[in-house]
Image 1 (tube, rainbow, N blue to C red):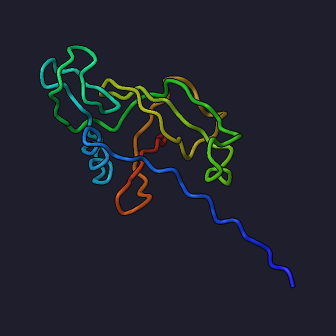
Image 2 (tube, rainbow, N blue to C red; image 1 turned 90 degrees about the vertical axis):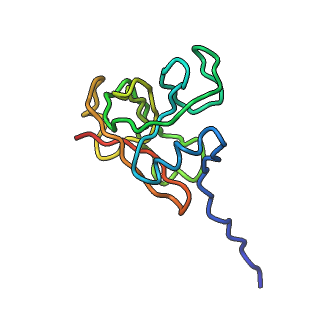
Amino acid sequence: MSTVAIAPAPERPMPVPTRDSQPYWDGLREGKLMLQHCASCGKVRHYPRPVCPHCLSMESEFKAAPLTGKLHTWTVCHHPFNFFFKAEAPYIVALVDMDAGVRINAPLRGITEDALKIGLPLWLQFEPVSKEVTLPLFVAG
């Protein structure tokens, strides 16, 4: 009698928060968009990082930001970068100009490619994927 090995289900790739990005991930888990602001020059930056690219200060603070933005561009993923997402293909990933002054990319759900146009108003929402991690996603509305 032969046995057939069953491949384990692929694991979802997960972000690894750092000391600098932890407030961003904590905010998403709480249903808020927390963006890093330089404590010296006041400029907002995303993704969170230790040094301000404008004035080189290492001091920062996180502030809640609006969840609204406009579609800058998008891509339709037919061939996922990771096998975990194969079942969702094709799916849309959007790059959004947030009203807070940064660009964020995340999946766009609930809309077809035919309905997309640059400048389309979008809202950031939250997808809990584990007890520790909530990921951003966009919806039109």
